Amino acid sequence: MCGKRGSRLIYESVCPAVLMSIIGPNLSISFAAHTGYVLTDPIVPLLPLLVLPYDKKMMLNVTRALKATKLYLHDMKNYYQSYSLSLSTIASISKLFPYCNGITGSSNSQLVQWTYETQVSPNKLVFIVSITDSNIFDLQVNSKAVVKFTESYCTEAHEICYNYSRSAPQLFCTTDLSGGWKVIVM
Image (tube, rainbow, N blue to C red):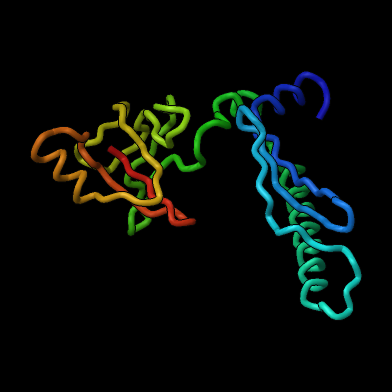
């Protein structure tokens, strides 16, 4: 995109990108995003591009990686061509906060939904949020809460700390996310 709209869109976006590097006879494929600084993650190991007739498995892996990358680029092109966000909507979405902005219960009814206000520490996935919708009795709309993302969490220890010494905030709910992550609302 060009012009004022494009430059603002780039500033507000994470600018996702696929990086393909040829290093001698090898290929590297990585994803990149801009979240205040550039993050890159390799998505496949370094792939040799040499024709190795005795190693058909490696040649098949190269073919699969290239085909998957081609399909991804095609899907992303279609997605962004049909993507229509106004600049006012984009301005309200921060690229520095996680995608998760609510927890859905087992009956698919929304338990709690929030908007991010600030990150407690730049090195921790702990955020102050404002509650926008809640079916939890003790958690009112427009109140503040803490949302934490972690790979492991002991709710029993948290409850003990809250119930006996009030050295932890009240635990409202927890749920599992994909990839082995948990989200805790307190």
